[in-house]
Amino acid sequence: QVQLVESGGGLVQAGGSLRLPCAASGRIFSIKTMRWYRQAPGKQRELVASITDLGSTHYVDSVKGRFTISRDNAKNTVYLQMNSLKPEDTAVYYCNALILRIGLSTFNNDWGQGTQVTVSS
View 1 (cartoon, helix red, strand yellow):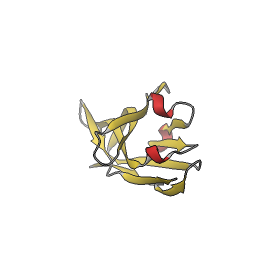
View 2: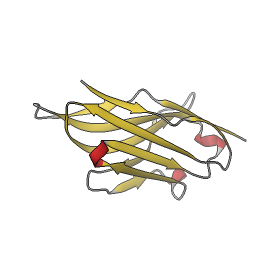
View 3: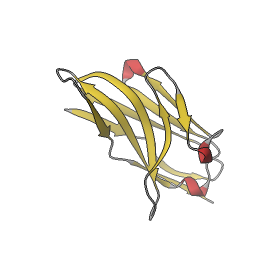
Protein backbone atom coordinates (compact mmCIF):
# COMPACT_ATOMS: atom_id res chain seq x y z
CA GLN A 1 0.00 0.00 0.00
CA VAL A 2 1.29 3.44 -0.96
CA GLN A 3 -0.12 6.73 0.27
CA LEU A 4 0.42 10.37 -0.66
CA VAL A 5 -0.57 12.76 2.11
CA GLU A 6 -0.70 16.52 1.60
CA SER A 7 -0.80 19.09 4.38
CA GLY A 8 -0.18 22.79 4.92
CA GLY A 9 -3.33 24.20 3.32
CA GLY A 10 -5.43 26.89 4.91
CA LEU A 11 -6.73 30.43 4.72
CA VAL A 12 -4.30 33.24 3.95
CA GLN A 13 -4.59 36.86 2.91
CA ALA A 14 -3.54 38.02 -0.53
CA GLY A 15 0.20 38.57 -0.63
CA GLY A 16 0.81 35.90 1.99
CA SER A 17 2.65 32.59 1.79
CA LEU A 18 1.97 28.92 2.37
CA ARG A 19 4.13 25.83 2.12
CA LEU A 20 2.52 22.54 1.10
CA PRO A 21 4.36 19.31 1.87
CA CYS A 22 3.30 15.99 0.38
CA ALA A 23 4.79 12.83 1.82
CA ALA A 24 4.73 9.44 0.11
CA SER A 25 4.82 6.35 2.29
CA GLY A 26 4.54 2.59 1.96
CA ARG A 27 6.33 -0.04 -0.11
CA ILE A 28 8.16 2.40 -2.36
CA PHE A 29 11.15 1.44 -4.47
CA SER A 30 11.54 4.71 -6.34
CA ILE A 31 9.68 7.85 -7.35
CA LYS A 32 10.03 9.59 -10.69
CA THR A 33 8.28 12.87 -11.45
CA MET A 34 6.31 14.52 -8.66
CA ARG A 35 3.67 17.12 -9.46
CA TRP A 36 1.27 19.56 -7.87
CA TYR A 37 -2.12 20.09 -9.47
CA ARG A 38 -4.97 22.36 -8.39
CA GLN A 39 -8.68 22.49 -9.03
CA ALA A 40 -10.79 25.56 -8.40
CA PRO A 41 -14.59 25.32 -8.14
CA GLY A 42 -16.16 24.90 -11.57
CA LYS A 43 -12.80 24.57 -13.30
CA GLN A 44 -10.73 21.70 -14.63
CA ARG A 45 -7.77 20.38 -12.69
CA GLU A 46 -4.59 22.05 -13.89
CA LEU A 47 -0.92 21.21 -13.51
CA VAL A 48 0.80 23.82 -11.35
CA ALA A 49 4.37 22.54 -11.08
CA SER A 50 6.44 19.41 -11.55
CA ILE A 51 9.87 18.17 -10.58
CA THR A 52 11.73 15.15 -11.93
CA ASP A 53 13.85 12.77 -9.90
CA LEU A 54 16.89 14.67 -11.16
CA GLY A 55 15.50 18.01 -10.03
CA SER A 56 14.30 19.54 -13.29
CA THR A 57 11.30 21.77 -12.68
CA HIS A 58 8.39 23.12 -14.70
CA TYR A 59 5.75 25.71 -13.78
CA VAL A 60 2.52 26.93 -15.28
CA ASP A 61 2.93 30.55 -16.40
CA SER A 62 0.50 31.93 -13.81
CA VAL A 63 2.72 30.89 -10.88
CA LYS A 64 6.20 31.48 -12.30
CA GLY A 65 8.25 33.66 -9.98
CA ARG A 66 5.84 33.08 -7.07
CA PHE A 67 5.79 29.31 -6.48
CA THR A 68 8.74 26.97 -5.99
CA ILE A 69 8.59 23.18 -6.13
CA SER A 70 11.26 21.11 -4.42
CA ARG A 71 11.71 17.57 -3.17
CA ASP A 72 13.57 15.61 -0.52
CA ASN A 73 14.25 12.20 -2.03
CA ALA A 74 15.41 10.74 1.28
CA LYS A 75 12.01 11.57 2.78
CA ASN A 76 9.95 10.83 -0.36
CA THR A 77 8.48 14.28 0.05
CA VAL A 78 7.67 17.07 -2.38
CA TYR A 79 7.05 20.66 -1.36
CA LEU A 80 5.26 23.60 -2.94
CA GLN A 81 6.32 26.97 -1.56
CA MET A 82 3.70 29.54 -2.52
CA ASN A 83 4.52 33.23 -2.13
CA SER A 84 2.67 36.40 -3.14
CA LEU A 85 -0.59 34.47 -3.13
CA LYS A 86 -3.55 35.83 -5.06
CA PRO A 87 -7.29 35.14 -4.70
CA GLU A 88 -7.15 33.31 -8.04
CA ASP A 89 -4.79 30.76 -6.43
CA THR A 90 -7.74 29.54 -4.33
CA ALA A 91 -8.24 25.84 -5.08
CA VAL A 92 -7.83 22.33 -3.79
CA TYR A 93 -4.20 21.38 -4.32
CA TYR A 94 -3.37 17.76 -5.17
CA CYS A 95 -0.06 15.95 -5.03
CA ASN A 96 0.74 13.44 -7.78
CA ALA A 97 3.69 11.09 -8.22
CA LEU A 98 4.91 8.28 -10.45
CA ILE A 99 5.82 5.55 -7.98
CA LEU A 100 7.46 2.17 -8.47
CA ARG A 101 6.41 -0.17 -5.74
CA ILE A 102 8.75 -2.77 -4.26
CA GLY A 103 8.33 -6.04 -6.13
CA LEU A 104 6.64 -4.52 -9.18
CA SER A 105 8.05 -3.55 -12.58
CA THR A 106 5.84 -0.65 -13.64
CA PHE A 107 5.29 2.83 -12.25
CA ASN A 108 1.88 3.77 -10.89
CA ASN A 109 0.33 7.24 -11.08
CA ASP A 110 -0.63 7.99 -7.47
CA TRP A 111 -2.68 10.89 -6.06
CA GLY A 112 -3.12 12.47 -2.68
CA GLN A 113 -6.48 13.42 -1.22
CA GLY A 114 -5.98 17.16 -1.68
CA THR A 115 -5.62 20.15 0.61
CA GLN A 116 -7.68 23.34 0.44
CA VAL A 117 -5.94 26.66 -0.11
CA THR A 118 -8.07 29.78 0.22
CA VAL A 119 -6.68 33.25 -0.48
CA SER A 120 -8.78 36.18 0.69
CA SER A 121 -8.62 39.60 -0.95
